[in-house]
Image (cartoon, rainbow, N blue to C red):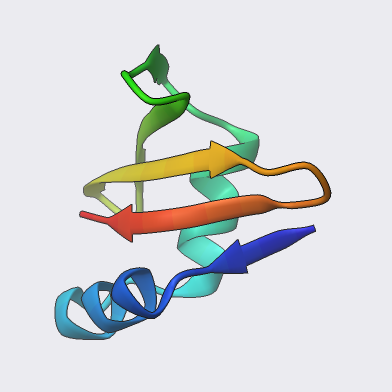
Length: 68
C-alpha cells in the first residue's frame, strides 16, 4: 500500500503533480537511488516533466515523503 505524507500532498499540489504521475514514476523509474536513513529516491520523466520522489518502506506500506 502507498501512503502520502501531508508534506508530499502539499508539494504535489504546489507543483501540479498528480497521483497518476507519481504512480507512473514508481512503476517505471529511470533511476532508483538509495539514500541515508533507509530512504530511496525515484526519478523519471512523465508528461515531459522530470519528477523526483523520496520515499521510505514501512512494515506494511510505502510512505511517500516528498515529490519534486
